[in-house]
Length: 193
Image 1 (tube, rainbow, N blue to C red):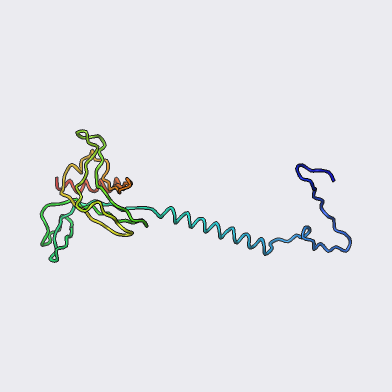
Image 2: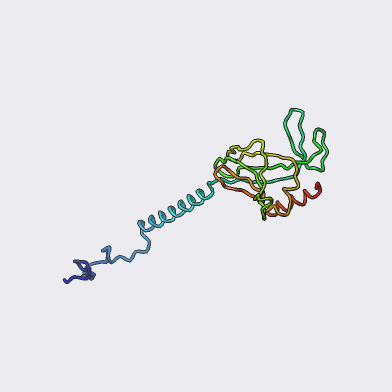
């Protein structure tokens, strides 16, 4: 036999000889065998495992749900603070209204929150935004832990020049109020300007 390409041997199909019933593996026309069934099962199972691992790893990151509301603050008889809607009148509440910032770690990793700030569309007096003076930040939030901050109501935070109100962590990741939330905050705040 001669050489075929880089191979030194050539493949010659054997023909059935008399008395051969075709049981030779090269001649068998079997559809699904146990080996091919197990190989298919293994491929499907490994694909599902890969998909689940990618899904889980992509979801396994820092995420914070951030919200800002205009509220009245009060102190309960046991000394704990609470916040209520500005239109409500409950004994123990202050007359002034405040911004209350609510942050919840909805991710699966702890996150250390650092700063609450605004960003301007156009700089004002050379400043790109305002920083809120937070009482308990920086603070580490574990999975599903919540934290509230508050500051005095200030109309500068609601101007049309404010592009975003955000909270950031120590690594620089930011979570912003949505446009809808910022619009609602401006509408609610217009009652107290």
